[in-house]
Amino acid sequence: MPTFIDGDNVLTQSLAIIEYLEETHPEPPLLPGTPLDHAFVRSVALQIACEIHPVDNLRVLKYLKHTLEAHAEGWRRSKRRLVPALAGVGFRVA
Image (tube, rainbow, N blue to C red; front, top):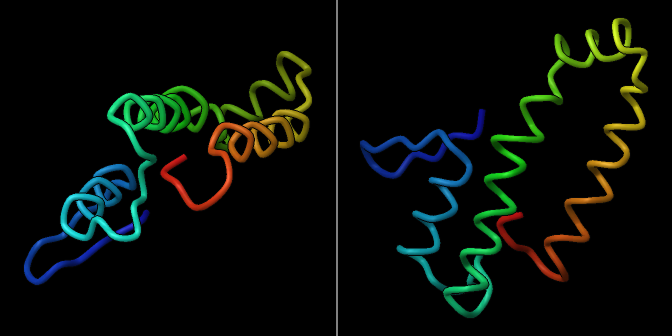
């Protein structure tokens, strides 16, 4: 689990850490230019955190692979292609 410690304060969620750093250390920016761009990147990051990532755990992948005969490695490969394409060039939240 990602953990960020700032003095006596501890943050443990990736998006909370990134937003904290963006607000307290705006250079270099972690979010792209406009508020609309910020919202888009946050929506992609939340889709990954809340929709895609929970399916990428061992229990769910075993169920998909054995019960539904899904190809778990194909799912992982498609996810790895999706994230860089949505994030664009440079280091960003997604």
